[in-house]
Length: 379
Image 1 (cartoon, rainbow, N blue to C red):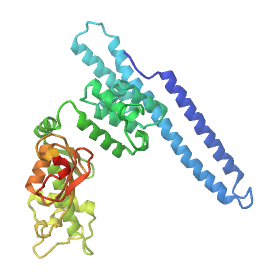
Image 2: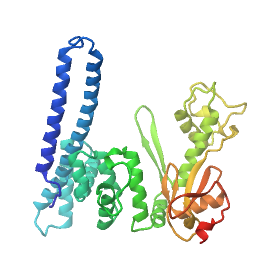
Image 3: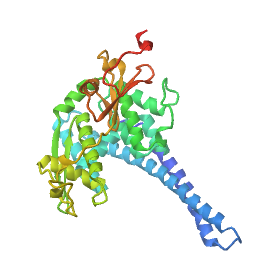
Image 4: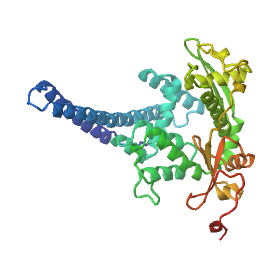
């Protein structure tokens, strides 16, 4: 089995990070032992320095956690690889599957996690180890485990060349078209995932339309009991449908808020969704602690729902049906061009349409239900 990251090099970085952390701890201890009154009039400076040392230690621990995560990922992947190597070269498939399952179970026991979590760790670790630049960045502490896991997730389903191109775009400054702006490790994980996903959607070997069709076929509702007499109810739906449901419940919740409404916005959303799904028509039926009603007959339907504007950014050629370039639904991310065309054509009131130039993304028309091509595109 070939693992791209050398363990000795990783451990060298770990030792360097531990040494840097030790220096910061010793300096803080010396300031603490000296006391605030050791130097007349220097109390503010001492406190300021100890504050700075706290921040520097947090940064050092962040790097160290990333480096240890690289060691963990490497060992998780190698553990299964060594177990497979113990088998005869002509071992049957079922024996190899059992060998891997056995290794995953032992990893789960060592880490005190579920079998599913251990299996996910092994799969993510394998993908990371197959991407040298990602493992290199994780080993050096320049990106966190969350950043590396995002790359592992988003490269799933890509060809080896496609995965390599994605990694080069975000991790190689000498790539033909490197990512602009902040480095990967300087972005919060959610923002980094959005950038990686947008890049992936535009270069995936299978069109977004085909992948969306598969996703629609897998739509479902799931119910998971939880502690304290509670439970989780989740829906896997097309993005525009889910976004519209969220917008409607949020807007209705805003409409219900007032001086006599004790529930928070977070509490109102599930109450409204439950009332709508159960046909109760009265939010008090879902557990309003104060028994508050919204009128003489009560009910969600009596509350005027304010407009909830959501941007749908559509490339002009995709709107015309000339290309299948993905559009972008605010708060959702890339969506198929067919979904964007339907939103524009239906004139859905909760969606605010933005038509953009396909060449540079500059806005052309905003908020219209009918569009005409600017002269710059006609030429």
